[in-house]
Length: 317
Image (cartoon, rainbow, N blue to C red; front, side, top):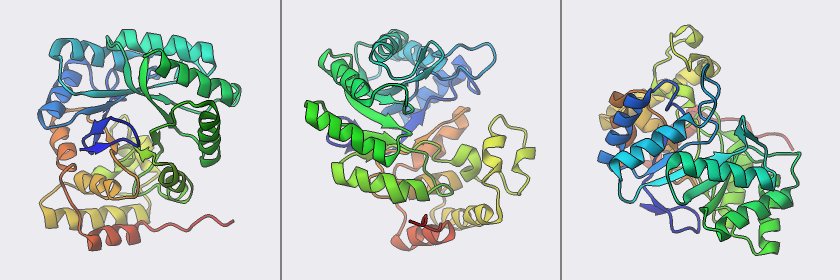
């Protein structure tokens, strides 16, 4: 296992995404997925207070509620849970008051005394960053959360957060969660990874399988035609180059007797500062491929081959 940043959070190299719980996975399916994940050695779950408010009939917090009920039922040992604040319909933004109220609501839904890892989900231009940083520090002091993290922050705003925290004696973020995968690379590799390397922050990338595109399910440029709730998100990657990435993943998967998704996650895990990619499963049958990625070691040549086929052009200065 590997420590997240400079924290004491010792995680296996995969986080199970809870975004599907209460959306494409109902309570029973979610319990089965969580059971299989833990039985296979997983110990890190990622969710957010806003999951899954976008589903008709939901109001936000459904994922946390399901996870909390599962935790109460199973009482697993050594499991770490990360959740986030800023997007719940009742707790929008990152003002100090809102952060406190949202954290308390998340703790109630999870049935927990403390949150292992708490993310600022999206930056909030309306809230002074000093106020946000101080509010997170107060949650640590009060024992509501163990460690601080940020998600979807620019490199400049992450540096500003770090500077404010250092000046105030507040613990620094131990993790950053960007959108990062084989078909979405340059923004993270140019901007976020250098900051993470400088300050000892771990990457926990979301959309690690590009909304399902990197499972190999979408094999034509008409991916949107696939009958799936996430097909629209995957369709933008179904370009000629994107399909070349799938072909190379398939070739390497054959060398390892592994799935395409396992190889895609293993490539991500091999990138600098990446500790635990996030991947979700809507069905328990999808869990084994996710778990297999934790122990799949690609050769240097295989990593280079995937780097090459997914190569991007650095942004011009």
